[in-house]
Amino acid sequence: MIDISPGALLSFASGIIFSGFVVLTLAGAMVAALSRHMVRSVCGLALSSVGLAGLYYFLASPFLALMQILIYVGAVCVVIMFALMLSEPHERRRTRRYETIVSTVGLLIAGLFLAAFIILIVRTSWLPSSVQSNHGTVQDLGRALLAQYGFAFELISVVLLLAILGALVVARSGRSPDS
Amino acid sequence: MNWMTWCDSLQAYLIVGAVLFAIGLLGFFRHRNLVGMLISGELVLAGASLNFMAFNRFVAPDPVSGQAFTLFIMAIAAAEAAVVLSIMIAVYRNYRSIETRDLNELEG
Image 1 (cartoon, chains in turn green, orange):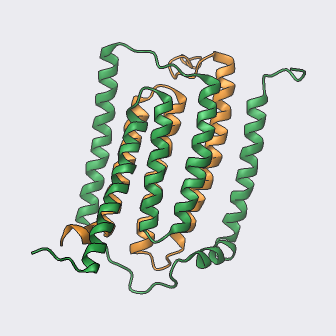
Image 2 (image 1 turned 180 degrees about the vertical axis):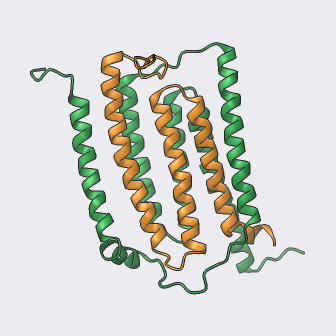
């Protein structure tokens, strides 16, 4: 017996969309981690970020979804692509033996961590909080950023400023001033 | 518990975050140049932020704290990417390569 009430259809559609975002996130991450061409890796990171933004939307936080796309797809991926074009990394083939050893060790360690995490996640009984002090809307977030987390917020701005200055200094060093 | 309700549970998001972390770790081992390692690091950070967001939605008493933390993670990741990429360009200027195998002057 198939339930075709609007509520059930809506929940079915949202399940499909959620799975699509999960697949997008993980497939993009796989491309980023496994591809030998760096340009494909960056594109995989962008795909993965879009999927992650969808998951943030499902977690009732459209603001963070927007920020994820703006910062990761719009800034980080573009900057990585620029650095890629300036430094043209060409992955040379190593010996087959070395390749297999590194891949096996990496797979083993990653699988170990994954298994440990999944066992931990499934076996713990997570208790939902009984009260929530607000609804986590953008207004609440803005108020908290300027009141509760004001100091961290200011520190982050200083860190960003220093990172920009540092990046300029490091990237310019070694160049003659007249060139 | 059927599949639809399981999709909207804390465990589903945590498992996706754990898989992202594991993929990032694997990429860290497989890539042999600095750009690839930076990208893998970003994947690990993405897994961590997804965990924060999931806990924020389902178990946190204050549903703003996780969002603020994720915003801070994004800002730190952007700053880190800028600095790492400028270092990469400086390294490339000196060594004509950003492969980890060629950067071995500190080896004993």
